Image (cartoon, rainbow, N blue to C red; front, side, top):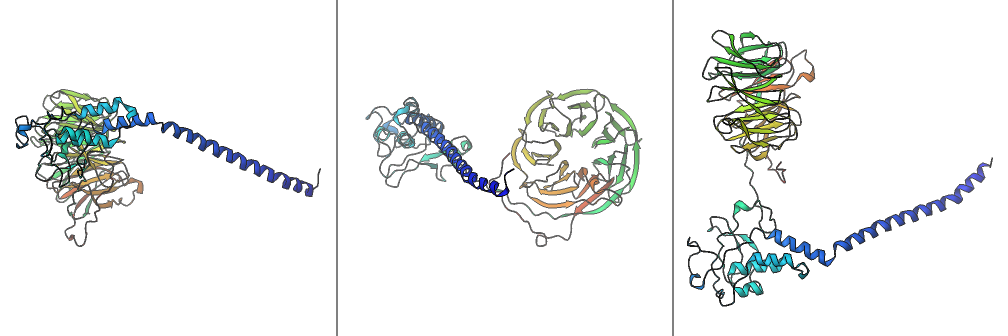
Length: 533
């Protein structure tokens, strides 16, 4: 065995050599990497391919203004361009008649020529000159480009043009050209031609001031999770359904228990009170949908048809129609009187966990665990459209009391839509970052959303600004994990909020009367570069 000193000497001799090899290997790899990049760049910079790319880009960018109307005859050059009698783009004041210099080539011909002759090196300026020359109406302008001092940029017209058309901009000494009859309007500014049409900046609405909400009453009485709530149209009492399989009716003013109804054999997930008849409807995990006569406090009808638990329930505001959605991925439409199933609205791929009904089309809106929201035509029993903006389960829907808008709440975001087509408007400006089980909105444009972690957030409806974040407090003896909000609802006046929670309590909230805009100012910053989806 060699001595230790000999081993150290051998290590000193080997280390510089191995280090040198490593450096050379690294240099070789670096050279090969960048040399291959240079070869790729050389292929991209080929003049033929560059000319093809430029011609394709010209054709794509000028597609919006590709087909322009023919120029006016010489006799109509001084007429008002707003005349409806086939008036196209008027001729410029200093331009010659089209017949004097030959027919004017259209922009379509120029673009086609650019696409068919890729080696000609046609770029943006020649085509832009062709656009300006064609809009001016002179053949010489089409051949030689814009007049000296003129600009071929396309900008928004002056305020006298009510349509917001796009016209060529000319210098003060150059010939003035009017807007063509098929000029691009502001409605087309979202079409993919970013080089021509400049997207106008949007002004975000300033939020209204709302007083903060505070908890003023805690009601205990249920022996299980409280899963649903509904208000009587007269605003005298409200009912709650629970996992203890009972429905309890409470006095709204005092919070006292008035009545307990039993009949379900599983937890009750949906409740609704009829504004026409003394009826209350309930739905639960036992696949049952029941109609209660509140004059006798008994079940008078049961609606059979669901194949699994029923998760949501809604009444049509005008028709005697009941809507239920459940774990069988179907929203069922029932005739209240005959107990007959009118439609089975199928199309979702997972549990239908939220449903709302309205008097005008779409009369039924459903949200599902398959992350979609569907708008239904109730007369035909078919889906009108499917909204696929969410990435997580849509567990809550809320419609504004008088606006044609609604929101869908999911773990990823709360999104606002416009009816009747379901056009996406915007996201709420903050993320609650929890599973949102329920949401509701009142006539004061206050949206409330409840999360699985016990958070209750209040939003301004129009701007999407979150003006208050509060956390529920579990009752003594409960775990902190039992702070979930399962259901909530504003009363008929919109001044009181009732939340149903996992700690087996019902909490009531109201606005703080002592709050002012000075004590609770609006801390709002307009969004910048906001994601639209």
